Length: 171
Image 1 (tube, rainbow, N blue to C red):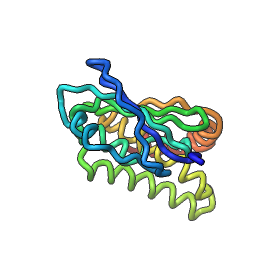
Image 2: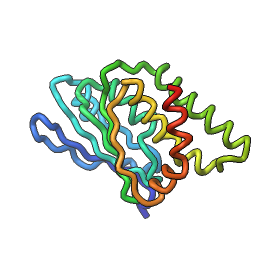
Image 3: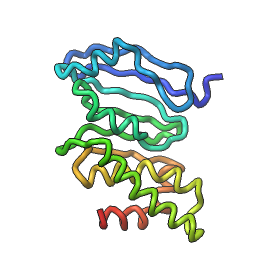
């Protein structure tokens, strides 16, 4: 049973070269083979990577940090099993790890306070936090981010929209 396993495919937008399906059979990640790392490290490439997120959550920290780690990566897509899709590419500002961590920490602090006050369930915070971090990083100019939320992802975002907009306004 391959349910819940991540797969990755990609292509070079510049040359049209397709990258084969990659999967290690893992639930939360895809390890890149050496040949793909070599392509992603080459700034002459413009790789677009597509992978699935069985949880239907937004891009992970590894996904977002790839946008600055690999000069040959133009962007990364995650496609949720509920039909949601998320895309990010490097923004106008370079994003060091500590800036990602600061954005993630800001979101976690807000979510934890809401959980502590029983205004948000832990599951809701987990489902919403990655999307909120990506929106905050985009607001700070570190990434360009697009999201097409469907079904449970849209329901969750609509439920938590005021919270997300509040901390985006406070940066």
